[in-house]
Length: 236
Image 1 (cartoon, rainbow, N blue to C red):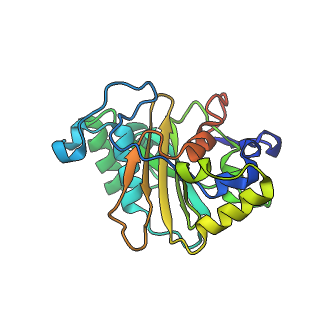
Image 2 (tube, rainbow, N blue to C red):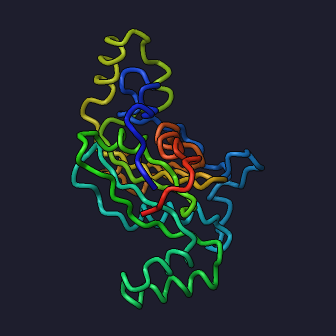
């Protein structure tokens, strides 16, 4: 994975910095695929065993379950996604043998499972997290990319649809809408064929309340897939 030049930053297409607030559209019952296959029953009507849950969904859940709340808001953590067997090979000699062996066992029993590895963005060019995110280029060595992002300036798609077109009025509207908001958490992941998102709209006071679906957070999904055809750069 590499970082593109700032000139290719897709944030420029979003007026008034709206991507900084994030927006999401509840879509919790859709399958994790952009091709729009048949929907699955609501969670209340089924209790799937882990093997029946797509790998992209499981890796999002794992990131969400293990990541501590971020110290700063309007920031996040980027991950590269790898087949678990490949990740075990990458970590051999760099991680505890117990962890690597557990990953190998998982890969043997579930060859399609994915593992997320943290990817450190450079912090020496003065760009904030989202602008860095929009410059990520995928390499052939990774299966996908995931991002964890937390903010106190979340907007729904309906909020964005109601925003005035005039830039100054729009900015005032966005500031009013997000004033006094608590922390929201977004976890978004994509491979070359699938995507999945989890949103905690009120992460501090109601962390168990989530929305999830394949394209809940279009802004973040666009940012992490902007460099999907980046060529054969080296993954880190």
